Length: 376
Image (tube, rainbow, N blue to C red; front, side):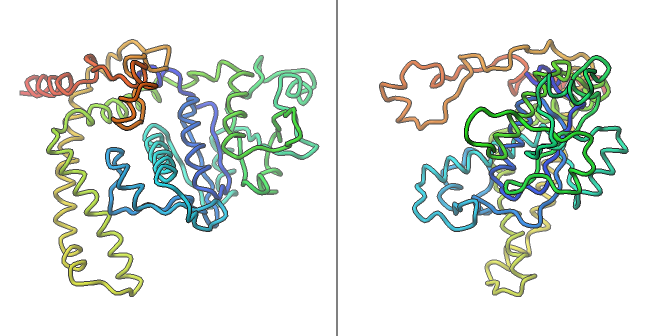
């Protein structure tokens, strides 16, 4: 499946998010970009971000610990106030959304900019045209007719989309900045058919990006072989690393990660001049030793993962062309008791069948051992 995703990835299209102020929209955009196959996401930092979910970092960030994470989370409205009536289920759903988005970034190349000017300059240096989403009357409709009208009936070398293009999305309230609109080669809008003349930012991003693939199907898989190889090296090793650690090592790594995140919070309190209790100082004093232990685990894992996938990087497996999960591999995120309830029984989403090829711990461990023998 990883090879299938790599073969469908595009670097011709960049998504630029300019000063989005809502973390829920950020996470939804990242997840959408990954699902649609856009590799590069450029983010122009906002002055402030309204967090819709505050997580207690001392609980870790592992999906298996989601109940505890949600239990200690604070849910907020996008405007800032705490949602005091938020149920545990609502907080769990929001926490899962954030964790999914965090996972999506593992497969994306995200680049941050402090200001719009620097982002525009970088786009120009790399040869990208700039299309900015805009509801103004001067914007061109993002349809074949709209683009041809803008080009006087022509195309971009036979295509409706430039060879390299960045599509820019602005803030939830006012859209792209004047600076970005002035720099844009083309302001565009998505045609709507109802009374509403605008959409939620993350929804608009999904529809606009999908429309660009419809207008130019050649965007799919538009990436150099060198770029694909770099992704294989990173992705295959990442996937192998998830299988190579023993259950005990995974548990230890999780505890060390949570410990260091807790130390980071203590350090913030110390820098802010807040009261830090004796137990907290003792915990903080062991931070360097814990970090060294975690680095040792991560270092060995990285080396073993690289060995395990070397042959696969050089000779990639055949890509899956249908990215949907096979029914036997679908997992529904419902509780065990819910799965036993009659409405859920025998549904594909409640069954889980083991994967046996290119995914098991034994598969990758054998390759680590094989490469060690070759080295000797």
